[in-house]
Image 1 (cartoon, rainbow, N blue to C red):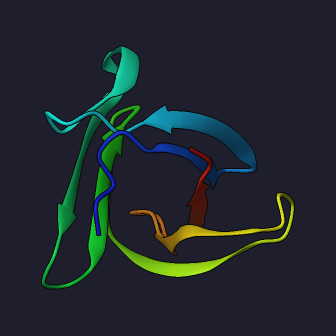
Image 2: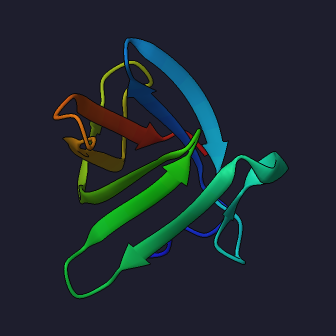
Image 3: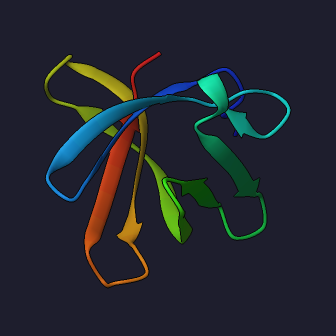
Length: 88
């Protein structure tokens, strides 16, 4: 599973934002960093001073765009839900 070059829409704290996953492990526009663990199929995002670990990555359906895509979900360090999808 390659996430390089993906544009992801993430929703946390009742806000959504677009993040671009660069090849060098950075989020576009110096927004933070990302890492994907192949063995665990989990995503780690670090941005806005928060390190969100062990996001579960899986294939699913984007009902808004009526297409199959990559989805992820998990909890932040405070136990709040975080989820998102690949948009490009």
